[in-house]
Amino acid sequence: MAEQRQGLTIKQLLSEGVALLENWSETAALDARILLEHVVGMTHAELIIRDQEPVAEAQKRAYLELLARRAKGEPVAYLIGEKEFWSLPFMVTPATLIPRPETELLVQYLIEHLAHGCRVVDLGTGSGAIAIALAKSRPDLEVWATDLSEAALAVAKANGERHGVRVHWRLSDWGAALTGIVFDAIVSNPPYIAESDRHLQQPALQYEPRNALVSGEDGLDDIRKIVRYAEGALTPGGVLVLEHGYQQGPAVKELMTKAGFCQPQVLYDLAGLWRATCGCRPTAEERSDSNEKV
Image (cartoon, rainbow, N blue to C red; front, side, top):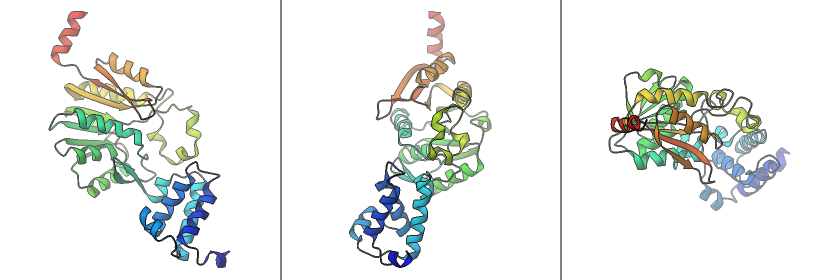
């Protein structure tokens, strides 16, 4: 086999990679290409232009090892140590959740709705994706971010330095370490999968940190904690933006409403699913109006 592999071109090796993954991944062609780009240090365009060049033996071995790991379900982002979010590259490790495209909804909403100079905190920042995307897109914002995991926070800080943004990073269980600080906006993509959810059996999720995925029997334990924290940590008129499961929208909206948040808004993802809910802490005038109605 070793002799047969000598002299394989980029094009031939890529074809072999796709063949090895097509029974294991729904995105075999994409996965095989990204892994090969990572191993040979080329962009997509370079891979096309130089597809007749031979691949060094060490690179072939490294590529085949990554393909074997991918075939077992390990996410591509962990294999290459990177994931794009908000058109920015982010370092990811098994200590952090892999950023999802739907989470960009939260960033987009805040960019469009926050006034100049607002103070915002990203609770449970993980790789720092939300906080860094906000700081990069809106340098006028005062951005804070917390995480309970020292390893995750180290990744977030490294990503912040990579993108040259200023974020106030804090090791904290949600907002516990932020006593006395009030925010104009609180945003979070917290754990929201129920302990018994069958989706946890998916191969890819076996590799992500469980404490970033699972939150009690109904998946809402951490959302309840964040809502309680936000009641006292938001300025009047401040906004709470929470990502959640597409079937949890009504429950999250009810939690916010019972906590006194007003003007609840629904954010839908590209598939038309209820992916996030926003609520505002009432102003003194709104509280007065509410009391009069009662």
